[in-house]
Figure (cartoon, rainbow over the protein chains, first blue to last red):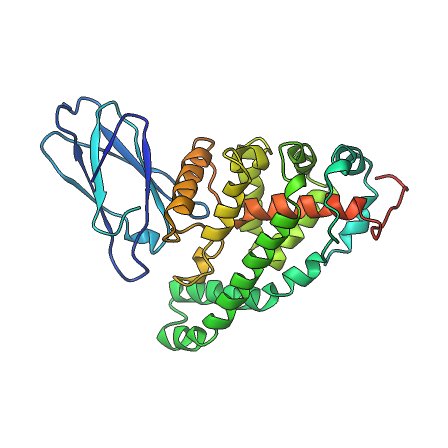
Length: 91
Length: 237
C-alpha cells in the first residue's frame, strides 16, 4: 500500500488478458475527502484517462483488468492524500 | 524500404541541422537499418493477423478456431520482436554520442508533414507492423512533447532510453502490447520506467518503442549522412 499525495503518481503492472486486476483506493488517515479524486491511465496506444471521486469511509474498487498485462499509471488528481494499492504485484 | 535515405540525405534542412552533430558521430561503422528491420517482417505479418482476427471477432465473423491457429504463430512473432528490440538497443549504444538534446533539433523537422524525415519514420512504423492510425498516433505523441523526445525521454540520462528499450514488451502477454513498457523485475530499470511514464504523462504522452525508434533512427540517419559510405548528394532538398 502506498500513500499518494496530491499530484503524485504511481505505476502498477496488471495481470494478463483473461485475468482480473483490481485497484483499491481510499482516503489516507487524516484526509477529509472534500476534493478527493483518483485518475488512472493504461500505458498503451490511444487510451484515455479515467477519474473517480474517492468518498470518505469507502474503499473504491476499480477494475483495471482491461490493461491485460500493460502498466497502469495512477494519479492523485485531488487535494487529499490517498491510500492506493492493487491486488497484484507492485514495484 | 530506405530508398528515402538518399532523399533525406539531400534535404537541405536535414543536412544543416545534422551538420551540428558531425563531431559526435561515432567512429564505429554505420550498420544497415534494413538489416535490423528484417526481423520485423514476420512480426508485422503476425501482428496484422491478430488485429484482423480481433476485428472479425468484434463483428462475430471469427472465433476460437481462428485464435487457435493464430496461437501457433505467436512464438515466431514474439522472437522477432525481441530480436528487433535488442538490435535497436545495440544501435542506441553505438550511437550514444549523438543521442543528446541537440538531436531534437533534427527530429523536430518532422513537424512538416511532407518532410522526408517524417515520411521515412512513417514507413519505418509501418514496416514494424503498425497501422496508419497508430503511426499517426506516434506523431501526435511527438507533437505533445514539442518534438523533443531526447530531452524528455533521457531526462535522467541515456540510461533512460535503454530502460525504455529494456522494458518494451515483445508481445508475450498479447501482441497488441508489443512495444509498450512493462516491468522487467529489475528494480533500478523499473524505477526509471515508472519515472518515464509519469514524466511523459505530464505532457499527455505515453512511452513506447515508437519514441525510442524515432530517436535511434534519426541518430542513425545523422551518422549515415556523415559516414564515408553515405550518399552525399548536394542537390538540395
